View 1 (cartoon, rainbow, N blue to C red):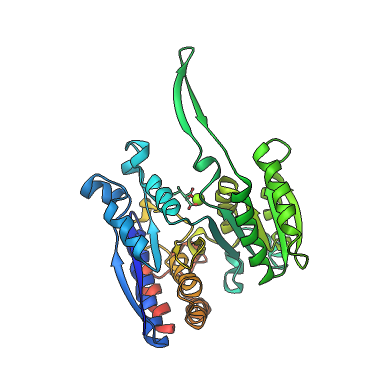
View 2: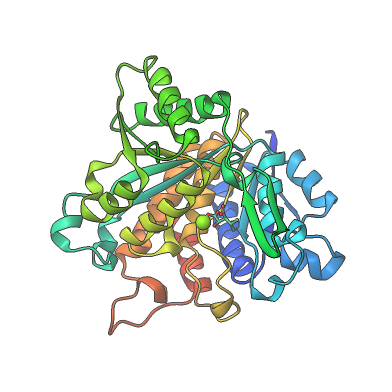
Length: 357
Ligand code: IPM
Ligand code: MG
């Protein structure tokens, strides 16, 4: 049996705690489904700055490039706010995504029936169902355009360039249409075409790609309207296709609709099967080391890793079912625990999910 190599980046804040639980779940799934997994630790983020001065050491990048998949907790924290921007923990993450060619970021937002009460939306709204996926372009746009601060007429002036080529838009649009084909066949492409050239090119390119997918319906929506529609009636969305920064913002909004930012996973994919899997939340330094973090976002990211990079859909299904089973039994970390009920810790929830796989 071929051994699959998984690069493990624990990172900062709650990262190590949640990754420990996700690795345990992967080991359990590997046992149960006869997979051979090897885990290679790679250091990245603030912890790497502290140890060797570099947020993304070359050795870590090489470990990820050699791997079949990368599992990541979270990086960054106020401790490293003063670090020069090229070496910030966040810039390590952006460099890693770019070096691995991971242009497609899939962020599913599904309100699990067990957590219907955790959504801040009115029950009448969530009753129509929340089950959509944000397909976010990940290695272009304003994140990767020129960034510059200079002095003009005696005052500081900052510039950040948003730039997209047709090819960059085409490939992410295809990912969205392919994703929609496996779902309810409806793409909402989100832009700001009433203001931005990038968005006008985006719209025209999405329409051109859509011609190859006559079975999928497509509509365009301005990003401000989309932000409103996500809380007004999230049931209208199936696949939300958008550029890098809009996708960053809308996916955080989407996560709240599903109850907690702690439970949403993500997959970042490129042309091959190698992917990077991480929860969409950050390093939560305020609760780091207290065993209060929710491991579900990372565990569900591990399920996506099994599905997309290891071609192990049964194992992925089993992990997702284990999460649902443990929630059915009533166990919750503090972020999704109803008032009056006692939350369990990160380690206990993770152990229960691993046992249920
Ligand atoms: C995310 C994060 C990152 C992003 C940060 C940490 C650079 O917010 O994955 O959504 O903006 O892409
Ligand atoms: Mg974000």
